[in-house]
Image (cartoon, rainbow, N blue to C red; front, side, top):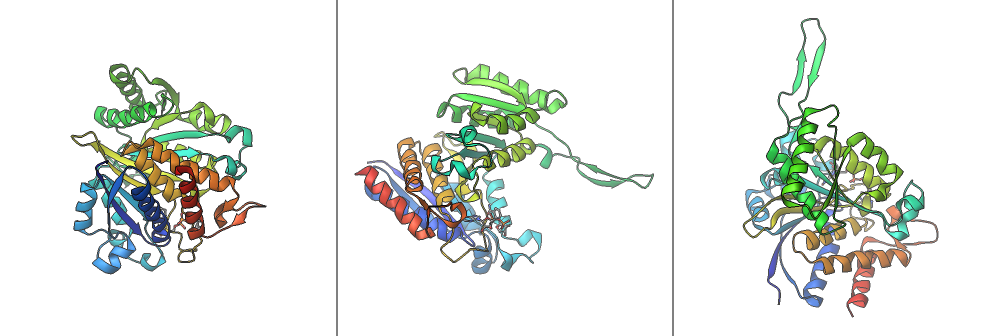
Length: 370
Ligand code: NAD
């Protein structure tokens, strides 16, 4: 009998509670049918927390998040809270979680399910079977570097300044995440920077190479300029396994890779921090999409991005690759059977609700585990 695994679920706002409801059902299924049990707590974040507790993330919830093995988040935000001052907005809850858990590695897989090959704007042969992972540095680089600001110049012009800055440790810790991930996947890492024109890129390349030579020689490492990587992602994305890059280039490359797959409702993500003494990293798993106020409360949302985020938690926090595979295969089969939520609807498929999609995935899990 496996030990308990502590999960904190923060459904949030809009479609968050609807999609996380489906995740909860899959967790219940796993408790009953697999050799693993979860100790699940729930809490409030975002607008829901503002309404009930007066702030977008209560201190008690923050503490629970820090103590959980993994946090599963739905989405935050909505028109009801748009007028609040910046410091009190729902998004501050999410930013506080990322900051206090020190989640410096953002993982964005781009996975194309066979049944959705046509949803991509690229040719089917280019994206069929695509399965890549972008690891983006999330807490350093030009979005945080000092000096920054806009200043007035004596001649009446203005000057905008941001600073790209990385230290050895910041580079090594995110590269270590990428190498560890590659070990669980195709054992290949491509590190992207602009070492041809940026000193921070030269340092990035040197430190990634050094870490590789010291500790990860079983993983194949290559280096690529970030602009070339942007081209290669649309030319031949299947050449990549894991891409690791800084905050700015990662922001762009991860969105580009995401769109190779065609749909926001299908995209999971993870954000990881430092390992504890047992080697388990602080971890937050969430769909890439937002709270989708336009469809909230109507049983229309696609729960698959959230279910795949839970599968990532199984794979990367709990080392339960078989169970993660099971969920991903159940999704694959339900899609192959022709069921679609409205956002991924295609001619000839059957349009279903959030709950019906969740039920179909559970039925598929039942069949596969029988
Ligand atoms: P969004 O991702 O919420 O929605 C964009 C479009 O995609 C909408 O038309 C929506 O209906 C659709 N969509 C998104 N997820 C879907 C799903 N699972 N199934 C079906 N359709 C889906 O982005 P937005 O409209 O720009 O933002 C809405 C709110 O969400 C804002 O308050 C924004 O600040 C917030 N937001 C939160 C997060 C987060 O919590 N991480 C991320 C992005 C946006």
